[in-house]
Image (cartoon, rainbow, N blue to C red; front, side):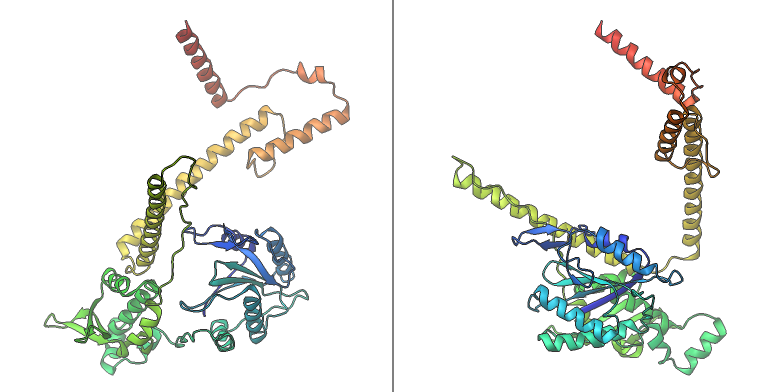
Length: 437
């Protein structure tokens, strides 16, 4: 069982993601008739929301609970739990029992939470760290505690024992393997040692290739600017890698074995992470049933075309996921790229502010035309102006202003924008009349 944790402050956003189709259409669930539906379904928790297929109910409950401690930061805790490939499909009751056991071990069983299921292999748990009495669950070392808790669930349910990750990873572990010369050179130059930078890039490549296979791992190393050599036996079995990112005075690459960087980067552990392929699900293209008087050959061709379309969609989804992962392995931008990106962001921000100013000026014209009082901060939307207009009309009715008086009142001056729109409509109308003649 594989678990990932994140925190946030807006349960509605994560709810819309969980009950939506996902980035690549991978979010599906089975209804009571065992039909696949896009999105997710609530299967458990302590909010009595079982069977819900949208987030409005439970997101409001979690939002209300989080308001008990306004001083808390990121009060919403989210964890995804996925069975390892090859594990059997767990029932809803087994998933509820697994989450309850994890909650008891981690200490948040009494906190408001829901369980949303996707497909056959994973669920999502969304929990408010603030309980009904205003007490907050700190969740210190929650990743390590989740690892320990899910190990007990794996043993109880007979699932595959997924190896745990070491506490120190990448640069932290590499710092403990520095030689005195590397440390002195780092102190003199003020730059991170090559061993530390290399460990950081290799770890980023492993993260990008998790569940994608060895070829994605090697392509990620190439994009990250890391040289690599695989130790391949005569039987074709890979027993390890060595990596290099710098050269010595003679121009030869300085090689590091994975064990010289971080024990977690050893091939046995990396293989568990990258060769455990995560399936990418897409909605299959289903051919229509055989029509009346349709030949079998024609129907077989349509079925084959539907299967081919499904395979193409699957390949496209896999390619999109592959490219998305490989972008994470790219080396960090240099100073020039950062400056250009920052300048582009400033230009976009200025253009956005100009559009907002034009929009507010147009809304101000509309407000003056409708003779409604503009608020101190200015108008922000047409909905706000419509509401103020309705309130003014209700107030006029209560004060006894008659309809003829309002109808015969002098018309307000149109803005330049509205005048141009009227001229354009009149020109189009005259053009249509000329064509009709």
